[in-house]
Length: 97
Image 1 (cartoon, rainbow, N blue to C red):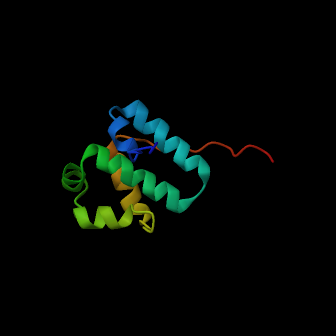
Image 2 (spheres, rainbow, N blue to C red; image 1 turned 60 degrees about the vertical axis):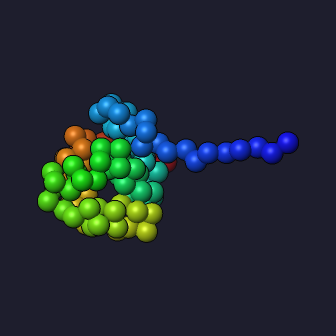
């Protein structure tokens, strides 16, 4: 018997601000910059790169490149995209180790 697998795309499930905020919060907690960049890319695809490009003034190509697994977005780009996505970032004390 052959099993068939389909690729899971989390972008399909990021349909409201609460889901987006939880997804981004989980990504940020990893502390892995590449993972965070890729997670923002997933959220950006969920919203639509064309709309996000229009809202941020950044090209679609720049968005795809910056928020890929190999991307390294500037803080300015990251903050502009987070604002356009309707997600605020907050700081809290890191738990003691």
